[in-house]
Image (cartoon, rainbow, N blue to C red; front, side):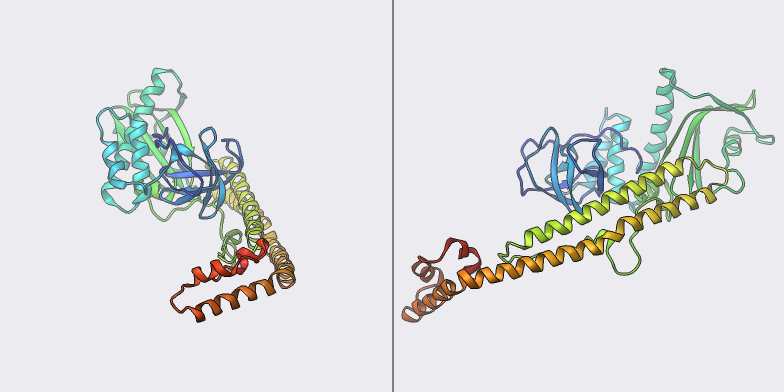
Length: 394
């Protein structure tokens, strides 16, 4: 993901367990504990709904999201689905800082990546913000000074910039774009593996030099890339689904409303397996990103191929225990169900049948009586431990 700029906090003073909250940021980091240094379990896209599991603590809240549970920053959540038009309008408000405006447009383009007006607004502000960042860096003297000679033959600022920062022969750059204001230039290159190399500085035509003063690397989301005018490029380090019909980390959960005391532990057992697998795969992704950053620009394709091979092997290691875990969960569930059934037969079967017969007689004697009225007259002697399962069908 492109690094998130400071976010505008969503005002949520009171949330309670059971409430549904929607992700308002471009993506919500779901972590294993309520702190920024905790293990990353998932990145939940904007608009997705998560259920609150426990009261907030120090700005964090425990959530149940579509692909697992974890802790997220409360300020990045809201009670309503994020409003695309509102993001666009807020980004244009007078006095809005460039970082805040760009963040709002990043949310908008993530919500509607194929909307041309949103793409245009995001693209324009993205490059404007980079020029602004260059000016502010100069003011604080926090700049690089990578100076290089301009290639022979270029005669104007635009052609000199492109010639000086053009991809090297044999590199895997799939897209590039650049702009200039006066003698200032900004230039971006996107590698086939999804890494975006952004540089900015100035050209001195008299001295025939280009000086790079700011440089950064990032991995933009597909939506952000579309906003910049690129499509069809994906993050090569992103976790891949396994071969065949098996779901990623086996996160294909079932639901049951039956009053079976075994089901919750079964569901929790599966969830634990999925959580371990997801955390493992995010570790693989982080290792891949570290590997990618060291590839440089020469022979990048061969270097990245090695990184990806190691990543896929790492992911297979994460995925391998899933089937065994699910089988173990299923076996425990079946054992629990069998024990529950034996206990039912021993303590609840006869009292429940007595209740059923009593309700039937009640309705036969008084056809106008409903089942709930008859049930009140018939369940006096029902053991408390049998009540939920016995009365489930009522």
